[in-house]
Length: 214
Image (cartoon, rainbow, N blue to C red; front, side):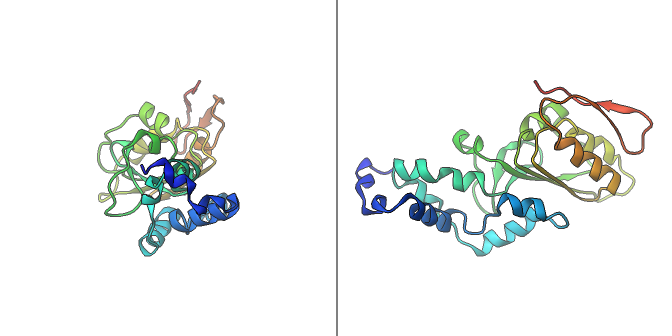
């Protein structure tokens, strides 16, 4: 990070509102507001966002200019972008656009609030329910895109690993998932963190006991 003398730059004589506008233009010019996330319910927001990022150059090196800029702007880079979770390691090695080095610094990981994960329904996952619950509970946005190369696979076994997630403000399930499963899983993930209840599972006569998270 740059020397503290950079904090004496005329840039810091600008009002905070103007500095914030500069940060937005350099770090998240196309970031979606929370209202946008709520409104967009029929398409893959994460994929559309990724295509936009490819066309919009970002300047994350700005954060290394000096401590004051780092403090004022770091949340804009991490909290407002949709990051793509690793298909096996989940939130441990995310990325926010193609060909960009995975974000592995703990300081950045803890600030990410918007997630997308692509999962295959026709192969055995390399994570369990507890890992999935811990990784995504409390997210502002979570989009699950499910696909399969083979039909008649046990999709429910993979999707059920996400049933313990709670406290997601906006949850979207896309891809090779029927409407009953999609709506049920979205309702599970948006339930409050402290709530424990039984929800009917699509296609079954019984209920799953959903994990208590405190």
